[in-house]
Image (cartoon, rainbow, N blue to C red; front, side, top):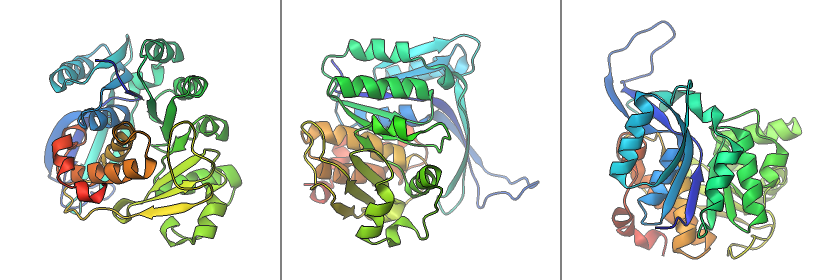
Length: 326
């Protein structure tokens, strides 16, 4: 089956701990433990794949137990992968602590993800004739990400760049190659301060449309979607949407609410949104607003289970809430 969505990015092995509250410096707390597949790239690929959209994950792993374990898991999941195995580099790993309020604190060691090469990425993309959406993050080699974005631009693919986690290597030049940028409220505040030297005076959800436009105009991408957790997302169509993408008018802002859920673990909700967005663009033939609403359901449902990739909902589960995105 030829892929329609290509997700390029990271795999890390999640090492997750659930506790009543976060430990203070120097404090040890008793909790429960879970391990499973994670990483923003892999998570987003799983989210897209589970929506029934042919999806390929392109990434890098080490020649070790975590890497071989992921290959076996992806095979069981039915997720096609094109993995660069990097000798001498460990597979990425993440320490995740979740408290009883479903908040999380995460430390990531990228390992082999930093060794993902532009050559590997572009050679795989060149062999995929049906790909229409390319999705990337800031959790692996940014040179590979930039090359993939440039490749997508020259071949008319719709590219989504999720600038997460916060990465000092992200530049305006890199973002200019992306058709759509999807930061959360923390990441968008970081990017605006990095590019302008000025801090946002208030939370993005409290800004007027005019204030949002003024702030987001510093992010050089045609389409900007800011995810704001339980408050949903904000779409700013900075310039006319490229290619066959249908959206709101140039310069307009649309605030899309979240769906009501009872969260258990919010880790990976942003990844669920991005994977759902990529899949939604294929499902709804470029209707960006409908794709965002679809992604909102994918993200919401993912918070009602523990874990990241294993928590991603199926298309059947999402369809039960079709009134939210139809």
